[in-house]
Image (cartoon, rainbow, N blue to C red; front, side):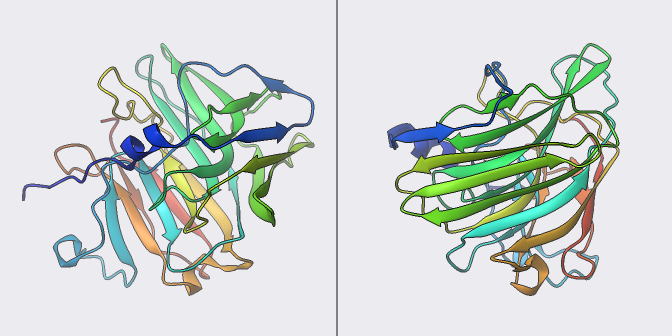
Length: 264
């Protein structure tokens, strides 16, 4: 069946110029050319044409750069989750995979988010952590990230346009909490996401690095299990509509896994 893509929300961000002011803990490094995070792209909204055969009761949507779960029916002040950093298997340079929690980006033109990433240089996988107040560029932390490290992350709205973004490597014992101000954030969604970062020369997502399986636990929004809030399951697909990974049903309303299928 032919897929009809919507205009990417990223196009809306070109006209957005909010003031950003961030205070970070030590260890932030310069931004490379590849950027994890940002808006959901080429989103096909939930509908009968996207009904799945696996019996899932959650609404579904498709995107070329996001997969995971999002809640979108309220105003959100916090999101949190934990995951174990997957091992990347690289077949070529320029393959990436990012794992993060965030507010906004599903149906708004900002995203407040923090997470980790796999980046492929030839057949070698490298790992890092970052935060981003989109449309500002991501900021990378200099701390070492290794496969198997356990992470917890959260984004919290503190009022008066202020956000607190926290990420902790509980295996290595380091953490960062960033305070940042962003005017105009709608706080209209909260999400726990696996992403194919941006951007190819044509502006699309980069090839998705083989991350094998990523497991997310303790996924909450506004302090409540994300699965108890009628979440949308987002499925990452290529331009031909083929799944780039698979997403499990939520267990205990908070836990799910993603399994890699193809790079692009």
